[in-house]
Length: 119
Image 1 (spheres, rainbow, N blue to C red):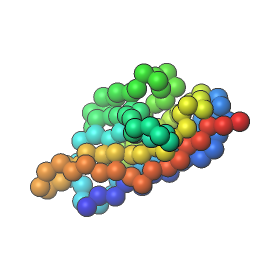
Image 2 (image 1 turned 180 degrees about the horizontal axis):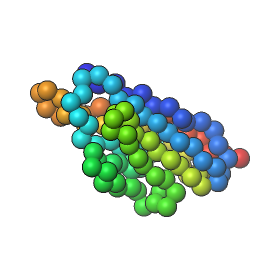
Image 3 (image 1 turned 180 degrees about the vertical axis):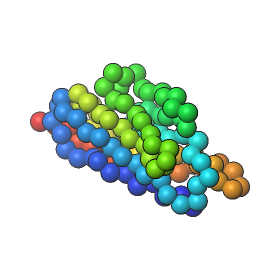
Image 4 (image 1 turned 90 degrees about the vertical axis):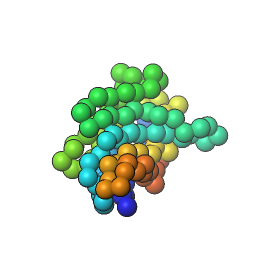
């Protein structure tokens, strides 16, 4: 089993910044990729950004130029630096990881962290 623990959410004013962290632990051979998703009230969960073990990144058009995803393979961790936050970024942010384990690749989710952008 693998656990993902997120931190770093909170309340911030428009134009402000936050940094989310996600740490994976448990039965891990290697982490194939990690990503951040978000879900606003009444909306479907959507991909924010993802990063492979080799550092290849992908991000939603709505956050390009404002959000940056990174990871530390040695720490099994991923980060999401969010700058110039807007009210429409308000959502619960979830960490996701595809983990190579002994018997295959597992798909894991964190518990979510709330990000609220409001004046």
